[in-house]
Image 1 (cartoon, rainbow, N blue to C red):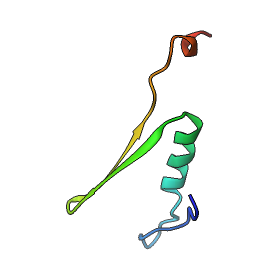
Image 2 (tube, rainbow, N blue to C red):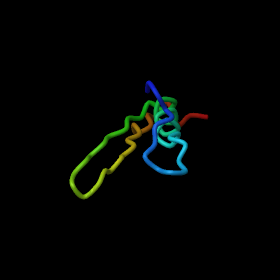
Image 3 (cartoon, helix red, strand yellow):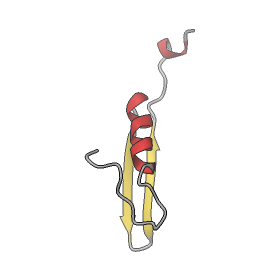
Image 4 (cartoon, rainbow, N blue to C red):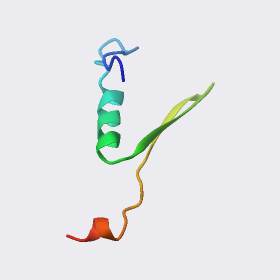
Length: 56
């Protein structure tokens, strides 16, 4: 992400998506974006854990 400080809100910081991207990257997840005339939907998809991931 080149510039995390982009916002269209008057009092926004623009950090929301940058924080989400950081969380997704740490957990090997991906962010999907769907945009239409009704708005935009962001989905965060996390991989299912393997059996080895569940061993403590």
